Length: 550
Image (tube, rainbow, N blue to C red; front, side):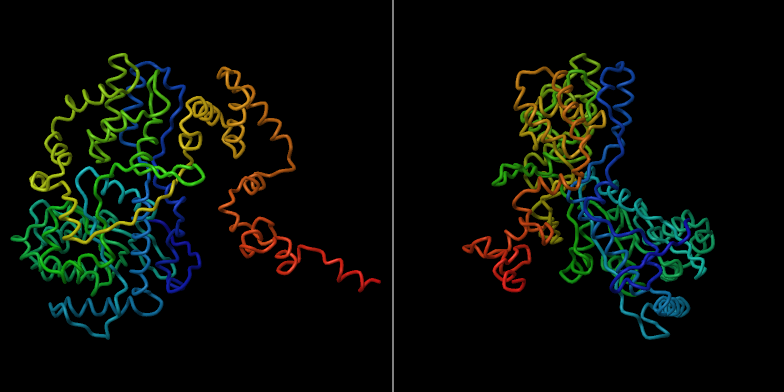
């Protein structure tokens, strides 16, 4: 629990202490920095003993997390859900008290539609988050939620706010057990005794549901995440319609945003009719299928925008503790890697790290196609049938495994689409140097010793061009000398360098006084000088000045 520290917000968020006590809204680059796994990797560790490297590899298997566009998109949705849900529950405008009073009325009467005061319009939304096992749903959610404090205490209001609550669906599949798990999660967050006070007594399901709704408002829960929703049983819960009505009531009556997470097996909750499907996807659903193998996109200026699979594997490829590790990931290895994992991130990561352990054990000290295939055949036998089903692309085979995605059918049933942004979150040496192995190796070695600056890329390119036959040690000495001489000239700052090197396609983002910006503003067929003279004060009009001073 932390004490609230408020920062002024904007729009409908302004003046709401529940929102203004939350961390600042993050930009996409900041989201990527927050989510990525913190891994301490040094190329010098490749020279350690086999036992030490084995431990390092095992540690990294659980720590690696590389954010791609789908992770950033999900963080944006959850950020909006939490804040918009609080708009209709503001302790300063009376909307929270109204919900508490109406909740008490429903609790006492036992009727869902009872209210004492005019109801407040709900600003909360729901989100259905569906994907196959191993696609990283739970890991990603935990990463995103960890960027928020779970509990915030407001001394001025004497109020304890729960920003998010994560509940796993019970294996017996009943709504009553779900309520028990809810009270248990509250107790773990606040060190209270709601489970003993309510859930372990002989209350009926309706009473428990009303208590659950009332407590949600009493502690201003910002987001309720219900994981493994496929465990809910239609028979034990009174039917899919009743289950969906329960979730919809949390959103519309209580004003509590709800994220429902599960595998495609949970689709029975949403597919009963079109109306239910719309209600189950109030904020737009996320269909988290495996990464697709797509080609890179080459821009007109020669730059390459990598596909998600290529971004992910290139980032992972750098984390090798093998003495003969290849700098550049060969296309044959990448294709084999995809074929064996079918784009399921969890399996792809396991194959990679297991391959390193096997490479050290066998003394080959590099990852090859044959090694990947051997790992798959010997260490991943439990997933062979599932991978073969995905590889076939046949819906009838995929349907035999409830945890796997049926791409076409499930997309139509849930109408779930995720707009993927083609943005590179981090600097990528492979693309920057067009796969030139010596340049990439030189860049990484200099970055490892603290020489990562805006001047590094142009300096590396220059030295490779001027000294194509030099050894690596000679290249390092020359680059360090050039960088040192550049650093001694303090007349140009880092920001100046960034401005100087900006590409023509980005000139429109520069300051108004910059001639490059003005060049983007002139008419297509006009003369640049005439534009400057007529539209700016950058040209000194001597013809106008001479008569005035004469």
